Image (cartoon, rainbow, N blue to C red; front, side, top):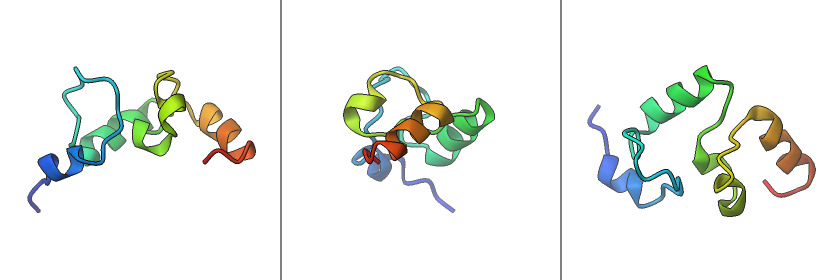
Length: 67
């Protein structure tokens, strides 16, 4: 399957512009899951900017009705 990196970038809200995985969703997900995190696209914009992508942070956002 061909990667749609340019198309993926249209919807990527990750603010870490130096990331070499931007738009490469499968690599991004694999990287973050290995660190017990979710990628930035799983978070609202203000929460993504904190760079806290932990499962625990995500769970707090879910409990607060923000996700």
